[in-house]
Length: 295
Image (tube, rainbow, N blue to C red; front, side):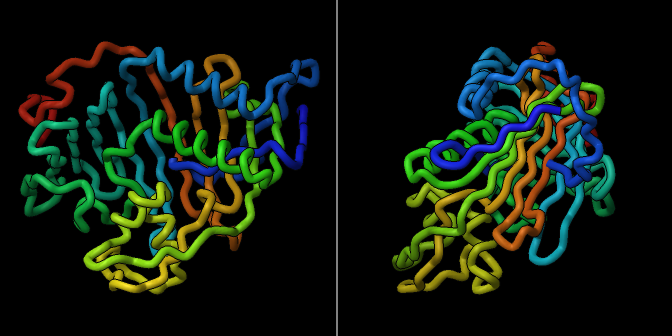
């Protein structure tokens, strides 16, 4: 296993963008493996690899801290560019299906519960029902968004000369991967809320994730709409206090993402399994009338 630790100015990431498995699952790679890439180069290779992908399928194992409870969900998914998503839940809410296509259905997601009464609804992606047990809207679903968040955090840290990182070469589930670990300081700014602003609005104008702002409010708000005019809302500079990104060393696709808060609590974790790329998904894959679906 090759390891490199660096302090200023390099570092990396915070992400949506996977599942909290012990690091022991990753076995050390061959000591003969060459190691030369920086975090910036690995992330750039990831973005370049994803740019060549038009669609993909897989299984997502998602673990997110909702309030004080970690909520786990496993789902089968299909994704096609520019942004088409089909999701089927496999454990919690088993049988529930969701479809979202940018610009279709008045830009609302289409969902059926998968349990009695199994009604079908069209929901605003930012509505409380759509966001139940979710840190991110379905508009942020996918590997590309994980790479984007990582890139934003990296650029901020380089500019501010913050953070430390460590790179390891491991074998995870039989595949050689880079594990990039980063630790970031808890810093940010207080933003004064304007009249009728929600945390969604503050997130848009500051460029920070809404749920990260909500989580950083230390229980001050239970809902994005609880903000009152004049409130001083803390907006963290970085996406989490410690993050780990696992990138396939052959194809450079991200396969696992973990983010911890500044109290070292797991904030969110995503693991992508059984990924298949450029599988030629078509319109019926994102159509509720597909006979293989249960809308």
